[in-house]
Picture 1 (cartoon, helix red, strand yellow):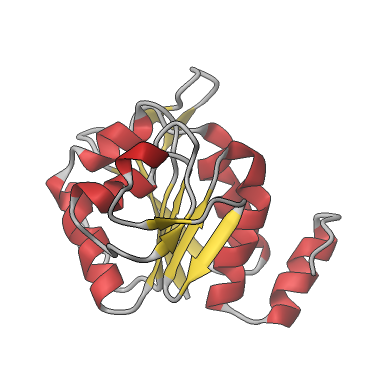
Picture 2 (tube, rainbow, N blue to C red):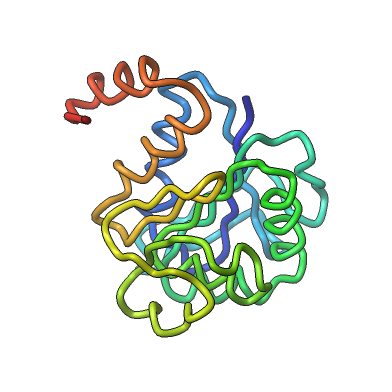
Length: 184
């Protein structure tokens, strides 16, 4: 298994680093991918700067099982501004691989007309931009190979939903128990 997590300047720290942590606990290879020209990517609140594993321009991401898009402002705006991000998301979605977007990142789907009509959730501040979707709200919504999360506060639940889609209930329960997280 391999997961790619796309990073653009202005990403929400917890939304980016929680999926990395959860995947590593499950022994899933996870690679952070900088969308801009530098591997150094700054978070939305200046909390951290992350050194990504690779640059999107130097990678085709063809060997991944899931693609994760964290939110954060202006992180999700910067993701949506990249045609290469749109191409990668479309390829993953069309090929039935997992596409996971949290907070404002579902607007990346909308920017490229990907997965229109599907059930999603997103941060309340961007829901009006998602008229082509069935925005059902809630913390985490799984609709086939599309997983969406409402925001930073549900980062663990979102990450565990991605893990469950990639593995199985036992792995998900084991990782959750190790984190002292109760799951249903």
